[in-house]
Length: 156
Image (cartoon, rainbow, N blue to C red; front, top):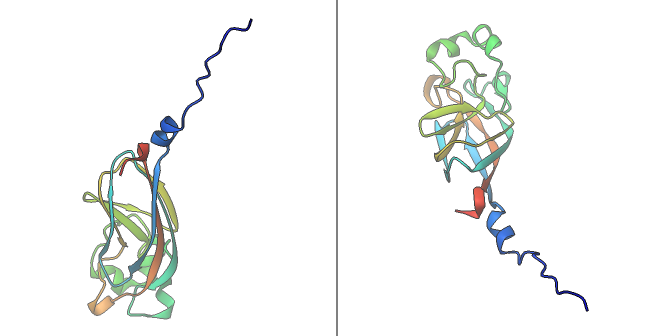
């Protein structure tokens, strides 16, 4: 006679609870706007992945001021665009001018073409590393950004 065995193969409930809930959307980040609210409120355990494309023109629509989300190299920005550079300070003075950046709870950080991060809590904003958006040194164009949030433990 064989002894009965009990198998502890899950019912799927535990796996479902541990699998992260994924939220995703595509946002347009205009070059002529300081910050764009994403509508995502982050928790520290959330994993955020951003992928960006597109172009902005950071100096009055001048075709030579065209940049992708990586921005204009900081070391060349002042010599190449002296009047624009002297006008005011960018939010991230050590990062490329007109690059895609993010802000959460008052902290600004570089995104560029692609970034993944966690450990931040608050409303996620996306913007341009520039200090002028309209007026004398206005920007044109936009970045398209895919925002993907993996919510830890499937919570919302």
